[in-house]
Image (cartoon, rainbow, N blue to C red; front, side, top):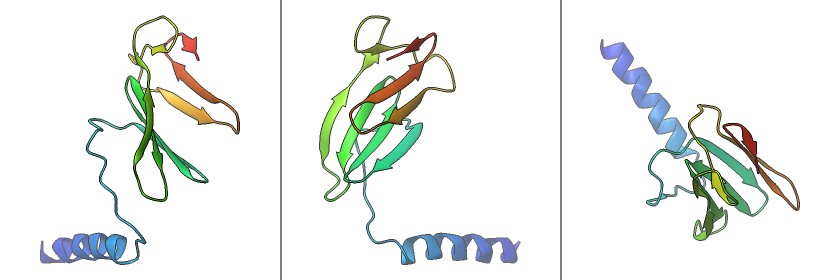
Length: 98
């Protein structure tokens, strides 16, 4: 049992010891996907998409809500995914790609 505690301690210590920055995102409740793209961090927290700055971790924009209309997503599926392209963000939700 002691060995497991030491292994867990070493994993947690090594993960934080070599990190450049540690950020807290208080707006998020249950994040599902995290994508880092140059100077932005995209986090899907169904049904919304949060965009943060990767330099200072400030919230740039939040969009999306639950529904079937424009700017709305149906996050009933486990595989709610986002795909970031240079000029577009694709969101794949239940029976809908936005």
